[in-house]
Length: 297
Image 1 (spheres, rainbow, N blue to C red):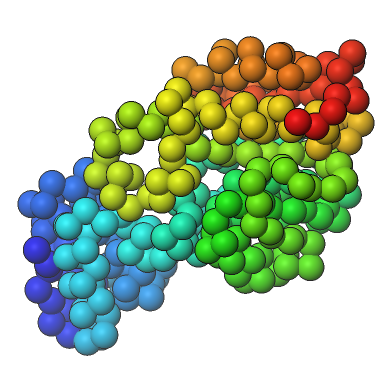
Image 2 (cartoon, one colour):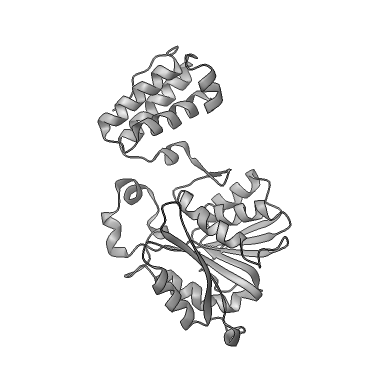
């Protein structure tokens, strides 16, 4: 299904055509999707569109809209079609090996920035970095901080490097391929992570956009969804500098299980935060006083 458009049609009319096509295809929010795709294809922002909704489309923009509408109607997510998504006011390129940066994850960034360890010259480690959005958002707001992002996917690490260059942060951010914190030397003031937390058996029941377009490696959290946390929490005491903190994101209802795991590895919960929907989404942890110098496992 596509929106058949000709060069010269008004942007506003094109947007309505796309909306109708996506509504017929069963998109969850056809009006919003149509607005995003049409304005991006036309090279307009919201202000320019409001000023002149009857501006004519070029032939190239009309063709682009038709292609993007067909892809969206077939179930491809809007931000995958555009190849990038905004996170905390920064634009991040996507690749097939990365998740889309999502608004819920901004909760983790806010909680990390509230940590006393998030000083202006903080050393930051991001485990499972993906697009690099968490690390790079933190470095953007901590102008003298430096960071390291680790991912098991070489393609994801390459995407994060490209995003660091595009954002002017490449001199303060490095990205490597690795298995969480294994084989890393040195310690960090902040360790952050949004690891896979979907139980393996639940993935086939996820929405089509996630199931068919998000990388399984970034979703699958083992039988109970907590596999990555066991590794990260075991490694954290040896990765944290004195006074440092670990901040992790997790799924609905996982907070208490993760706190119990953390306590087993000598960490105590320092705080938690809820996303805009009121769901507990992230927590911070620090070494308990009697386990401050625990050996990394």
